[in-house]
Image (cartoon, rainbow, N blue to C red; front, side, top):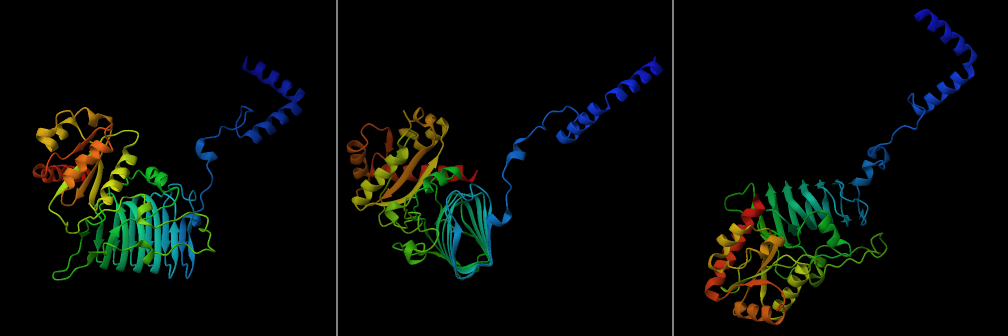
Length: 365
């Protein structure tokens, strides 16, 4: 049987050799034996990434950077730049800045870390999850950082609260997974303190970004982006931070998750600052029913159900008479909104301490 089949196979092959050649040609074209087009996978369809598009190396005396939409969450590297204005107006995964001198930086929201090494005479505006410097000298930083900023072997470091705006910035914060209310800009940890010396300090309370980081040049590629360093337009609320409080009276004002939580928080900030009260700090954090009982104690009744809808946004406001003023604002401006406001001056300090201690512990987990 085997021989019979072999002979038959030879005869058929001889009679149909041109077709066999055609079949072989098709198989070679498709790369398999089926005659079908090769299967494409998602990674085959991706655009090829050129590493040079995500680097700035050896630039001098220029205004350079990346416009919105040019990074889209990729990592970025800045290295060996001198006397430059560098604007990265997009969200990214991480940014490293090495060996830069006399530069002004604006770094849009970074999902991970911003790490500056061996830099000096640098002024920057930065929003990130983690901020760290090593072997840096004389830096002025307007910062929004979700965790505690760390400096190492660095001197002459000065910090202020993030103040910046461009039209896509709010979306970039969201894309980077950052909250505009979680900003530890003044809570600096010096990894290498020197006895008797101070390696870092806070910028003056009235420090303005424009005095440190100039607006984009009119003839640069960034002229079409509506950039503003006006504190009143800043996406991130301008907070007092760790500076000494002017009053012993503070108030906790908390919004629960909803469609207008951010807008309501901004409205409150406008209301209290018009009355000359000071915004000390803000936090956005999730709470469980047991957290509510522990933080608010006797005032916890009715709050447990409200926190199930999502993270709460809390603000510490300071000034003589601030508790009474906040309770009046809650009734007049937010009458249809579920909020928590400290009941009295005698309990407000406890409210503030309990909530922000809890929030700090949650953020560190």
